Image (cartoon, rainbow, N blue to C red; front, side, top):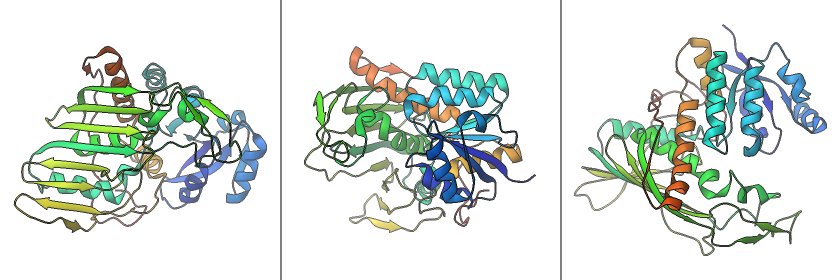
Length: 366
């Protein structure tokens, strides 16, 4: 069976890396892109020698089996469901949707149609996190006991050309960046059983300082400083802190995992590679650990390519809808727990994604 043919809907900034990497996988070929702004789609398509078209034309294309949905979060559900109803498998940028209710409709539609759903982030398939999974599975830190995760930022209004949606429903630091951290944690430690947390809006109004909208005001609708506690079904307890309100910088690590026999310093889950450090019980210094897996550079799109290979080979795909839904529910759970002053018991679960084999070359999949 040849390559799965894919089409992209949404030709904003992130589409460039998907199109650049699309030709580097042996399981997937991106043949078209579409956008509400058809001229923008055609201009992007011309850069990569593919066809640009309207969304309706792409969904009606018989040759396209997989739609990669790169629209803004508020449009994720509607576009995913349109693609599924058109008979296409769908892979969507994070988060799966802005609410778990909408996300359930995506999964229910896919089940009814006999199609697959995949969802970003796919950074956990890069060399950094995959090497950490191998270390944990080999018992290098003993039995996992706990983990911490930190995403500390001053917000996007200082650099993003149109940052308002980051402060509306489906935005905020947890929904914007939480998927990277939570997906990495679940890929290392397995599913989450319950969460609790506290959340606040520190600055009800933000002023854009980036061009072209410098000086415009943004009303903040979602929490911008969220602290959460996670109980993993396998036993460890995790802590996560995400913020758009840290104006003076931070020296906190991205992720640390603590075990009965040592600690693991995990690289930035927003990237595919990075430096791994291990410190065994009784040691005084951290040791740098070489990566055991490839795809440590910007391999964005590897989740969609793994999904395409899974469709072709008849196996489960790793960045799947159940994982994306589980992460979305946990993020909602932090906000809900803050409002109710209680723990939130997770209703969903998921399988820990199968690790990739060690030693594969860049952009290769088992």
